[in-house]
Length: 117
Image (spheres, rainbow, N blue to C red):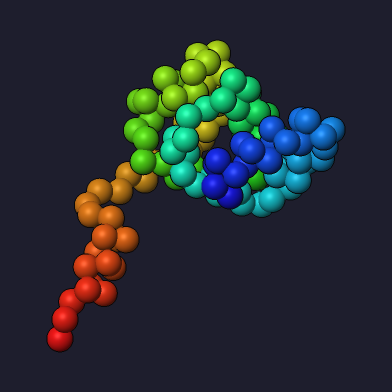
């Protein structure tokens, strides 16, 4: 699930009264991949909403978070130090961190597609 889509779904669920159902839905997945963390700015309650998803999954199911944003910048991105502490406490201490480097695979594939023979 792309983070922007997840956060929008949660915002709409709060409005239409289905918030608890959305939380339950995401807590049941054995593996939840949160893609593109840090791509769009956080709205006022987004960090709190994300915390609720993370909290419901902690020690029960696995979560993968992909981001181009360094972990050292997550506090400023989440824009709420208390919630950032809670989120990071739940994911950092029980996680495996894989840091990738090198050129983007999209760039490599794009270059390969444009090679003339």
